[in-house]
Length: 394
Image (cartoon, rainbow, N blue to C red; front, side, top):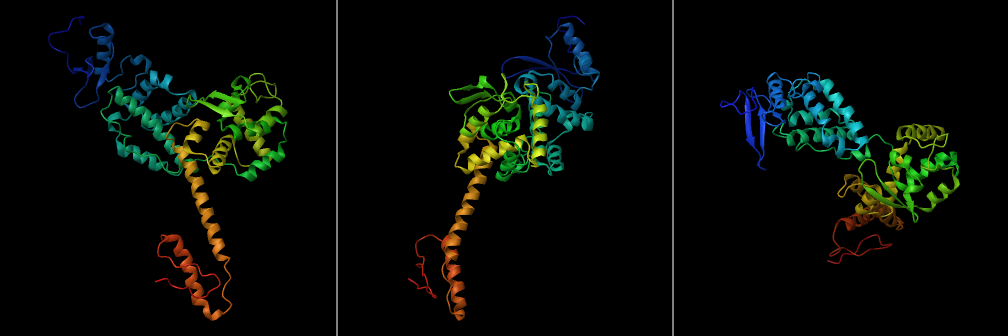
């Protein structure tokens, strides 16, 4: 086949012009998926890719080990070799999603990509409903994969569109949020000046994830503030060093490159740090882990009046984050319930009538008190301390 355009177009070869004016070429047999040919038209590589596509192999299939074109396994292979995968996602996110995509290939790698629809994705979420946090991670992974496939025009529509994340996953994600009693118990086991206590204080008073906490060091501190770009979101956070953390850093043995070090004084990887801190928790007889302290710090901040914007800035969450909204909402609900309980307790402190015959009047009085919380101020009857019968103003 020559490099010049043949007068009669080869079978199953389609030509299109994008909205940007670029010419793109596809191979499509019948109603099967379109396979884009990315090499310059007319080159040897172009015609080799064309022949591969006709045989149901992905272009340059030597790198995909004969995986059939248009299948889930084929698209996953292409996605994990893309610029978007290597540059737009952090190493931690890639590691997490790689495991989910591998599991997907094991189950449905042979399936045609265009056979997966919204119902398939929703059923996948339903199967994972017992673990909402894991279900949401799976959906985010699918969104990344299918969104990329749509952009590359491997499929026409994203089957994840309209499928919602599970609500409340932040409260039921398997990471236990430390209680104040558990924090105190850990502190009793690991005194100020120990590496274990320093780890707890860094996690609790900075809100950093374990990977960022493990690499935090002198180089990140200036003028009493921590400035560090988080590994997961690549956002720079600025955190003031609070007094308890300052005392802990001053008292504990610290390394040159990181505050927290291993037995030999060297920085730890986030995996080794997580395992080491887990052992410290077991020794202290507390159920918490490193990530649970980040959650405890967020809860503390929200209970002390932090706004969503303030939480986002401190913990490195994106604006409009579901995480910060969850903590603020939980703190507000707790405050509202406490305020209501206090007011109800004050009303219950009103002396009961001495005459048991007047029991019905006492019941009416209590109902009136509850009603006062439900109705607007105008038109309410006045409070009637020590009276068994309320006086009407009507």
